Length: 87
Image 1 (cartoon, helix red, strand yellow):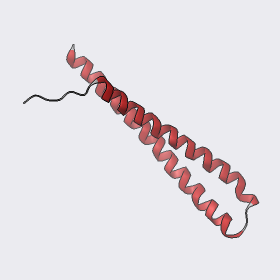
Image 2 (cartoon, one colour):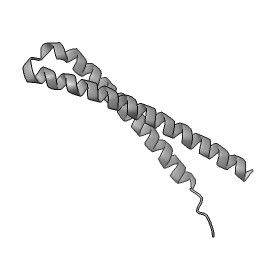
Image 3 (spheres, helix red, strand yellow):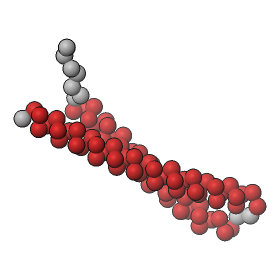
Image 4 (cartoon, helix red, strand yellow):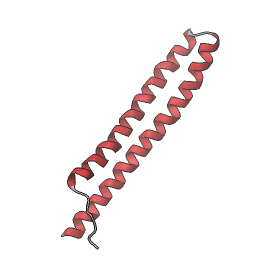
């Protein structure tokens, strides 16, 4: 049967999605940093919530950056192997 090859537009979409994941992860890290700075000025339950979400945003942000970079790297390798196969 005829295999469907991804067009250039689909490859671009995958690379853009990976970049957006990495940028969103960076945004979460900056949020976590600013929340960490504000922990000392908060009290009671608000302080506990800020600590919990600072930790969550840090972990999720790092995971999203890692996922975005790995997905982008894999997409680049696939594109290279496809271009070598075409030659």
